[in-house]
Each structure stands twice: as structure tokens, then as C-alpha cells.
Length: 193
Image (tube, rainbow, N blue to C red; front, side):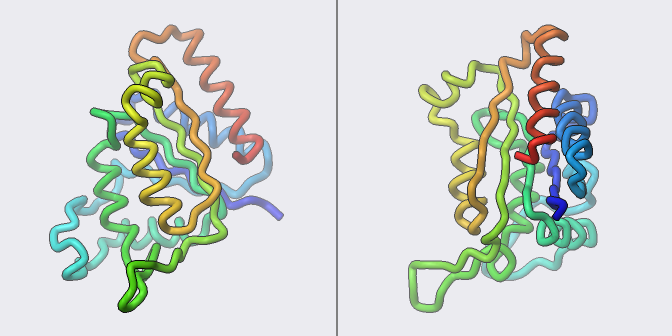
């Protein structure tokens, strides 16, 4: 059975290396005969502000409705984004805030501190670019964006396992280094990981 893979690109700039990473993953996955869909968050027409929190539901724009259908369709979600100020780009955070909602991704239990995880059975891979060594990001800075996306969003909603690949230091990288990273990502796509 073909694996259904959704590639979610959270970088707002089409000229970024993240778009090359997304393309490399896609090419690798296509070689493995996986079914692939994509979401380029910066191309979506939506308000990233969850204005009322969970007090009042804001209607989803058509692009968010279509994105949620893709998320439901997928077996495996591949999240590609840079680390900015230790976190996710604002547009990607807004995408998550607006879509990963109660009754969609999770459901609080009545009169309980616990919740039901509505996205069980899916897996994910986070591929993130850094302008610092990955060891520094992990051990000195505590990998805040990864913890936020992996633990506090994806696993909170039942998506497991969630693998992480760090790519960096991108800022001072050579073309040869970038080609090595793209080859590595293409292999990840081919292995459907």
C-alpha cells in the first residue's frame, strides 16, 4: 500500500533553502512511489490570528478547510521550517493555531484535565534549518521550536513517532554542503521517513 505523505512548508520566502529541502524530500518520496500532497503555508489565504482563542470559533477560510482535508488524508506529515528566534515562523504558528483545534485535532474530556488525541495513527518528521550548530540548539537553547511542534502539538494530538532532522549551520554554508544536505533529505523521502 502506498504511503500518503503531506509535505508542509512553513517558510514564508520562496527563495529560501527550505523550498529546496521540500523539493528534495518530494523527489525522494516520488521515487518510493508514495502518494504526495503539499501545503505551502505562505501561499494560503487565511488570517493567522486565533483572535478569540477557544472561546469562540472563527470560521475557517477555504484554504484552511482544504489544508485540514490534506492533514486528515495523510499517513505521514513532513514539516519543513526554519528556526527563528528559537521558534517557528509566525505564519506557521498561525497555521497551527487556526487548524489544530478542539474537535479537529484533539478533544478535551468533560470535567477532566485529560483529552482525546484525534490524530492517532499518523506519523511525522520535522526537518528544520538552523543558523547555529544543532548541538548548541539542543543542549544550550533547549530546542524550543522542536519541543513546541513535536511534544506540544503533534504528540499532544496523537501523532507518533515524530522524528527530527536538524540542518545547519545554513547561514555560512557552501554550495557543496547544501548539496549534501539535499541528498540526505532526498534519501529520507525515499525511505518515507
